[in-house]
Each structure stands twice: as structure tokens, then as C-alpha cells.
Image (tube, rainbow, N blue to C red; front, side):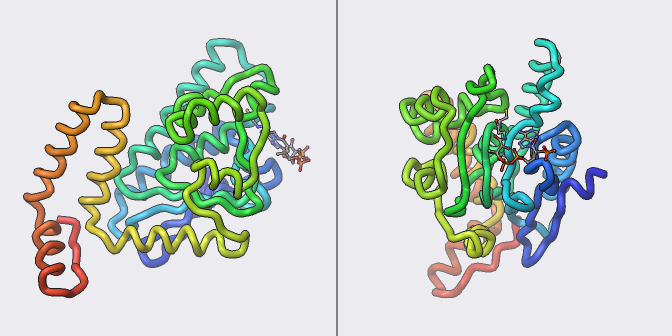
Length: 259
Ligand code: COA
């Protein structure tokens, strides 16, 4: 069952993961979370995959947590659901391969939060981003209250949170919520091209860049700079670093091996 909820295809080292519950606008129920929780580590382990593009089937990226599931829960069950969703999204955020959200349509509530845990977001002009939980008498529970202000600033984040209003792809791009904007029929191509550009770089360097940014954002600057220096130094042990610098001097493309 989980297989059909997430469609996975791999071309030229880019895995495209499509959330496939279009009749419910890809709402995140327990089964979708289970599928995400097993699929991403499996992609991290695959040698033929270097980057992931995450998108949704039909007219939504993800229209949120499954409200039908939420409505029945008591406080401890709701908290447990929040912790589960947070853990799955943190796992995606910590993947050592680039993850790009290709936001094709509604990215509301948990869908916006899922896009936020990806490393980069490409928005369709038809996308719609928002955190409407306050309209349901709730707040975001999958990291939205924390990742959105870190990405677009406290004032912009609180405006979206407190109004519950959605913004389109162009406004998301202007706010810095999305890092690229594409017409709907160019969305996957744009996201894949971005992934392919990343894949021309050293995979160990990509992993170190993701890890260093992730770990450093919440540390005091002196501590995060020290962590950067350690990661920078550790890369000197890699054949990829030697190959990358030699290729530059020899004026040829580098051939990275991930070692
Ligand atoms: N959870 C569960 N089901 C959802 C859902 C969600 N978050 N979002 C949409 N659906 C379901 C609808 O119930 C409907 O199912 P049905 O056909 O069995 O009735 C189906 O998906 C299509 O949605 P519908 O509302 O008919 O489409 P629309 O085009 O009229 O509206 C939205 C689209 C996105 C504006 C609307 O679905 C919506 O507001 N969804 C909830 C968004 C939200 O609050 N997310 C945060 C949750 S914490």
C-alpha cells in the first residue's frame, strides 16, 4: 500500500518522489508518513541516487495533515502525531543528499511544513503556500512555527501564521520561501536541472554543506564557525577534494567518486 502512496523513479541519479493521494490532495495521513519514513533513508542508501526531487500528484503538493485523522485525537495523541511528523521531516532535512521540493500546487499546513524541511523549494506559479492551522484552532505541529521564521523572518512568518492566508508561488519566491519560480509545465524540469547542477559537485562536499548549515544555524556564531572549520578540514582527507582542486588547475571537469 505504501508503494502506491509514494511513486519513486530514478533518472540520471535524480530520484523523483511523488506523493500519490490526489483524491485527498495528498493529505499527510499515517500511511503517507510511514512511506516517507522508509523511502528517504532507502534513497540515501542507494548508490545510484545523488539527489531527490519531492513533488505531489495532481493539483496539490500536499494540502496538509489529514484533518479527518486530526479531528478525532486527544491531547496526548495529537502531541504524539506532532512528534512523529517532526521526526519524519527532520529525517528528510538531515538527508546527506540534496532534497528539492517541486511545489506544484497546494502546500498548506503540513504540506508547507514538508516543503520547508526540504533543502530548496522550487515553486510553480500555480503553487499556494500557507499555514492555515490557526483557522482550525490549531498551530502548525510539524516544524512550521520554527522553520518558517528562520527562512523568511519573524514578521513575514507571523503574518502568514496569524492570518492563515496563503500566498502564490510568485509571492513565495519574493518572500524567500521558494528559491526558484517556474511555470507549471517547467516545474519538474527546473527542479531536476537544479539537482543535476548540484550533482556535478563532490557528494561528500554536498553532504558536509548540508550538515554544516543544519548544525550551525542554531549555534552561536563562534561555535558554528568552529564546526565549519572542522568540516572544511575533514574534506582535505578526501580524494574528491584532491580531484576537484587538481581538475581546476588542469582546466578540466572534475570526476568525483564520493571518496
Ligand atoms: N485533510 C484531509 N482531506 C483533505 C485535506 C486535508 N488537509 N485537504 C483536502 N482534503 C480532501 C477534501 O476533504 C476532499 O475530499 P472529498 O472529495 O472526499 O470530500 C478532497 O481532498 C478535495 O478537496 P476539496 O476541499 O474538495 O478541494 P477544493 O479545491 O474545494 O479546496 C483546498 C482545496 C486545499 C482549499 C481545501 O481542500 C482545503 O482548505 N484543505 C485543507 C487545507 C488545510 O487547512 N490544511 C492544513 C491542515 S492542518
